[in-house]
Amino acid sequence: MEASLSSRRRQTGFPVLVAFSALLLVAASALFVYELVAFSRREQQLPEGISVAGINVGGLSERDAVARWERAYAEPIIMLYNDGDVGHPIQLHPDQVGWRISSEPMLAAASASGEEGGGFWRRFLDFLLGIEQTVARDMPLIADYQENALEAFLRDIAQRYDKPPGRASYDLQSLTVQAGSSGYALNVSAALSAVNSALRSADARTVALPIVRSGSERPDLAALRSLIIDFLDSRGFIYDGLGTVASVYVQDLVTGDEINILGDVAFSGASTVKLPIMLDYFRLLSSEPTTDEAWLMVNSMLCSNNASSNLIMEIIGRGDIFTGLRSVSNTLQETGVENTYITAPFYLGVEGQQLGSIQAPATAPNENFNTEPDPFNQTTAEDMGTLFSLLYDCAEFNSGLTLALPGGQVTQRECRQMLEIASANDLERLLQGGIPPDARISHKNGWIFDTVGDAGVVYSPNGRHYAISVFLWERTEFQDYEKLWPLVEEISRATWNFFNPERALLQPRTNLPPTALECEGNYLPPGPEFVNLDDINSWKEN
Image 1 (tube, rainbow, N blue to C red):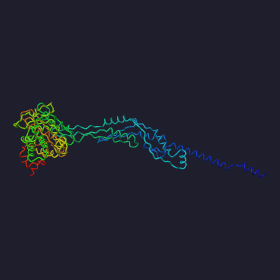
Image 2: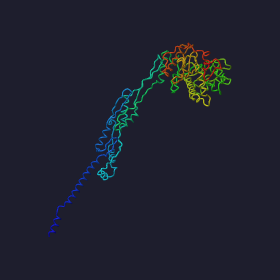
Image 3: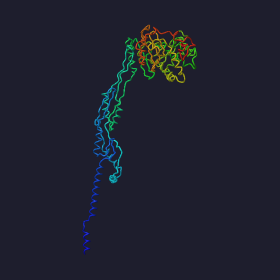
Image 4: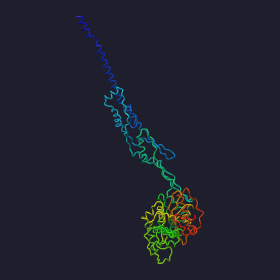
C-alpha cells in the first residue's frame, strides 16, 4: 500500500521539465516574432548599396528615399554666360520648365532589387544567420520636362546677352579698312543639350553655356567696296555718272570672294586685249616657243607694240590676220570671258581690211552705262579680272584655264610663262603704282583718249594673292592723265592695304615717274636671245 502511495505521489508532482520546455518554446517563439518584426521593418527599407538617379538611398525608407532624390533634383541649374570679360550666372529652377520626376517606377525598381537574394523566407534566414545582402546598383532617372519652355528660356537669355559683331570701318585718308568689333552669341542648340544633361544630373548642376564668337579679325570685301566708292566720290569722280564711269573687279584668289563695281560695263579694250592675244598664241603653239616667237610676245605684252600684236594674230590665222582675229575672240568665248573681243587690227592699212568685216560675237554687257567703247575692241573689268584669275589657277593648281580649254590646249607651264611675262611690265604706274615697289604684280594695261584700264594678279607677301581690274572712263577729247592715273593707283593702294594690313601703304607713293616708263631700255630684254620665259628678268643679272 505504501508503494502504491509513493507511485501516486510521483505522478502528481510539479512537471518541471514540461514547464521548462514550454518556457523555451515560448521564448523561441517570442524571439522568432521579434526577429521577424525586425526583419519586416528592415524589409521596408531600401537595401544597402542601392542608389537611384545617382543618389544613395540605401537603408532609407521609401518615403525618405523619394524625398531625398526629389529634393536633389529640385536644386536650381546655374548657367554661366561668359562673354569673354564677365561671367553672368543665371539660375534655372527646374519647375520653370515643367520638370517632373516619375518616382513610383523608380521606387518600384529600387525595391525590386532587394528581392534578388531569394524569396521572403530565404532572405529572413540570411538575416537570422547574419548574412548581409548588399546590392550595388543605380536605378536610372525617369523624368521629363517641357523642351519648348527650356528653349524659350534660352532664347530669352540670348536676346539679353548676345552681342552682334560691329561693322567694319575704313579711313579715306589712309585708305585702310578696319575690322568691326567681334561679337558673340549663345549656341541655343548646343545649350539645350548641355542644360538637359545638367537637369538629369544630381551633382553636376552648373553649365558653362556654349558661346559662339562671331565676326572676324579681317573685314570682308564689302567694306573695301564701300571704301573705293567713297574714295571716288571724295575725288569728284562719280563712278556711275553720265560723263564718268568706274569699273572695279577684285577677287580674293584664296577664298574666291569678290567685289564687282559695275564690272560688266563695256570699255574700249585698248592694249589690255593683248593678254588674250598672247593666250591664243600659246594655245596655237604645239611646242616650246622659239626665240622669235617669245620675242614677239614680250614686245606685244611689255611694250604694247601694235605691229607685234598684229603679227601674232596673222601667225595664228596662218597668214590671214582676220582669221587670227576671229580665233582670239572665239578663244575668249570658250573660256567664259564673253564680253571681250577684237575684230580689227591695231592700226589701219592692213591689206584687205574692212572695218566691220568680222562680226563681233554676241555679248551682254551692262546696257545702263555707255562709255562709248571702241566697236572693234571691247572688254570689261570683270572679264579682264576673270582672265587673270583663270591664268593664276592654271599656273598654281593646273585648273582654271586648263579646265576651260581642256585637252592640253594650254598647259600649266604656259600659264606660268604668261604670268611671268606680265610680271615684267614695270611701267611703275597704274596698278603697280599703288603697291610697294618690291611687290610682285603680273598685269596688262591700256589707255586711249577717254579710257584707262589695268588688270592683273598681285602676289601678297602674306599669301593673300588677289586679282584686280580697274577701268575708268571720262567723256573728254583728251585724257587727263594727272587725274585718272592717280585714281587707279589709289584704288590699287586701298586694295593692297585690305589684303596686306601688316604692310599697309598709309600714304600714296611719292617715287612714281610722271608718266609710264618706256619699255625699251628699261624692262624689255635687249634682244631675242635674252628672253627667258621662265625667268623674264634673268637678263638683268647678266
